[in-house]
Length: 254
Image (cartoon, rainbow, N blue to C red; front, side, top):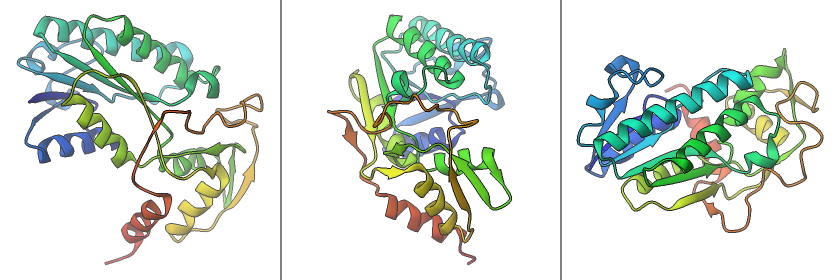
């Protein structure tokens, strides 16, 4: 199959490309470096020529609800218009598990909700993979809120998933039939603070974790269990311990 990966140079997208190529498919990365501008639509027609499916794992660093909504809505609209014109049979989107209850005021989630709405209203058959936070999410948020050796994180319980498991699910979806909404989480629920502490420990770094909702992307009104897998969710195969072992190995000098 010929499968176009929008956002194929990022953490998950690059792994989706690898998975598809390993399975013998042609994976085409739609990116500016390859002459494709997803915000204007320039280059999309050529990139999608002969494509069987599209995987959208695009992202934006914007943290304003108007900007995130404009970005995700525009990219989804442009992709779907080009896919319809090219006769693409399947649109696969990476989204976020439980985002309607975990982040009603989160600006990033506002954009993702717009993106989902565009996909679901479009004419191209679709699969939306709503994934839990990645294991890497702990270090990402900690990087925003670290001061010296102290890290502030929201006091919530997560069920994080390996980005590799998410990539595998997206690649499998793209080569199969449209499935509607699929939810994916990891096998190990863990406190956010503990995830951060374990991640830094695996890298040989020690931090003091301060649980607080102040200045966090999630507020104290977040329902209990909102970040845990709902009934019927698929569970990834990579455990937190296995991921931490990989992190330690990557941090150990050769």
